[in-house]
Length: 248
Length: 248
DNA sequence: TTGGCGGTTTGATCTGTATCAAGGCTCGGT
DNA sequence: ACCGAGCCTTGATACAGATCAAACCGCCAA
Image (cartoon, rainbow over all chains, first blue to last red; front, top):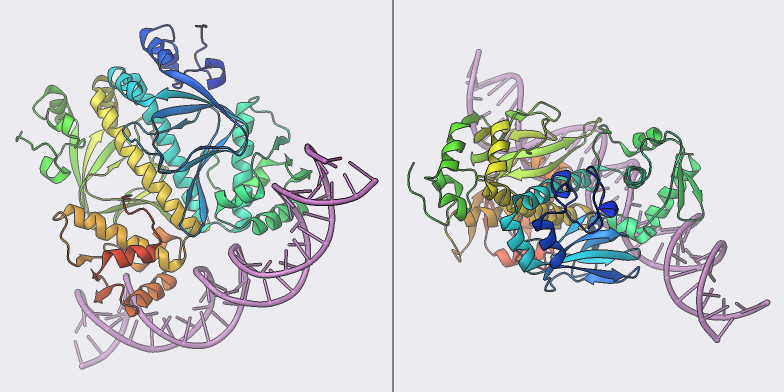
């Protein structure tokens, strides 16, 4: 295996699901070798379902490239997105054999899967893994709580602004650090997916995106290509006080 | 220290924050002795604030008795509860030195605190702790996601029914197992706190509670004492399909 | 006994978002 | 070049829940 940098992101680390420096510094070690032996890749096309809620799930996985969503659906069809998985994010729960959510690829997707049983055994033997997983899970929990504030208390306009800010910042951090100018990205979600994320209808999403455009908070080229001329302005619209918090 | 049962709850285990059988079976061991040395108790009166968001937090803790809430507040005062801590629940995040949320005692409260630095060191040495914490955090994440569905997609009536069902079930599981009859409990939250939990106003909470009473789904004695004659009926009103999921 | 206060209920009205409906844009296939 | 499907926008209207306002209840203290 290739030598790895210390403070790496998943793509550079290839297939190590545990991208923490302490573990990656050991990439040559036994424990990573054991991870190698239980892993396999799966690819999905945009729109494909990775797994349905309630299905038997005999693996855990991390996203290598692409974006996946976790959604919950009520009997009458109301849907709520409860997680957005970007590269290096982890899915699956050690110690549970059924999926709790629908997992769907919203773009073309590659996942690095690990068979669950041996993964759990490995976790029992190598404390780093549980510690790293704990750290990641706590990050996700923080993100979920931020999301709860959004769902419970923000207006439609604030919700849209929040989502755009989240995507813009995640996107920027995956690219170059601290480029001061405008942020530019392609929306990875349809209007309907945005609605499912935000607890709105797709019509309301469309209206509010148009409103933000009309008011000069964002610029649009086509439906998906977004330009954020001023992130501070956008964050103000989002109603976020703390700019430190980074969400999923 | 006293001998502990295996499948115990926190109260019986006294001060062990890690109530998992594997750890508790070792209550006589060195590692628990070390926990003993870094722990202390704090008591709070109903309504007191344990810690404000942004404050320095040099401990982690678990609830011994009473109920605490985690809330987030926006600049203009909009509030959203993002966590409800019942006995044996854990607060605080290893590897972070500031509180991310306001923590408030809604009833008289006793917490068992552990100084963070030594707790982290101990966690590094004893894998059980990280594993148990991971398990608990994953449970909380599941609860948070269920909560997101509630906030994003449920009607006011469904929200109230969901909250009552959550409290009734948690309460029942703390008392006797599988008592088939009516469930009876005292609401530990004011109408306003319920509203902050559910992303509603207190007036709407009041109206919907009255409506559920009028429709015979619940019975009330005074403002707080609730009787659930038929849990299945209540869960139907809550719009929950899966009855297996247990929330915070 | 009175007054005041926190928590709660209830009523009247307003408003933001959902719902229903129609039409537009874009891209790929025939 | 045309068609159709998917996705998106826009308009008209309906409604759930917010907001504003008043009054109630139980309880404690003076």
